[in-house]
Amino acid sequence: MRSDAESAARRLELLLAAANRPGLRRVHVAYENDAVVLTGCVRSFYEKLLAVRICQREAMGLRVVDDIAVVDDRPASLTIVRAFQGTSEQPS
Image (cartoon, rainbow, N blue to C red; front, side, top):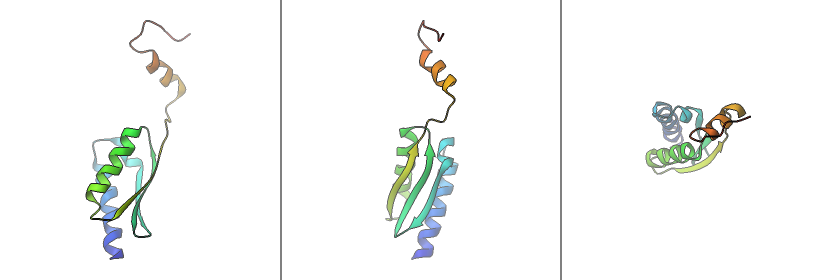
């Protein structure tokens, strides 16, 4: 059973890497203590939820443990520019 579960974890990681969301490539999948464990960092809660849902759907009945962190690693200047897009205000 362990080798089947480990191969399922590898398959899930490949599935996430092939998804149409580049951020999901930063999610790592491992088999530990009779569960599929998801680790890594993504940029949004949506990407985190998407990774978990994909793995739950494809995990062949294995328990999925979500240890994914949401981290906004964009430069602060990009965040400021995006905050002002669509308004008449400009950063000073």
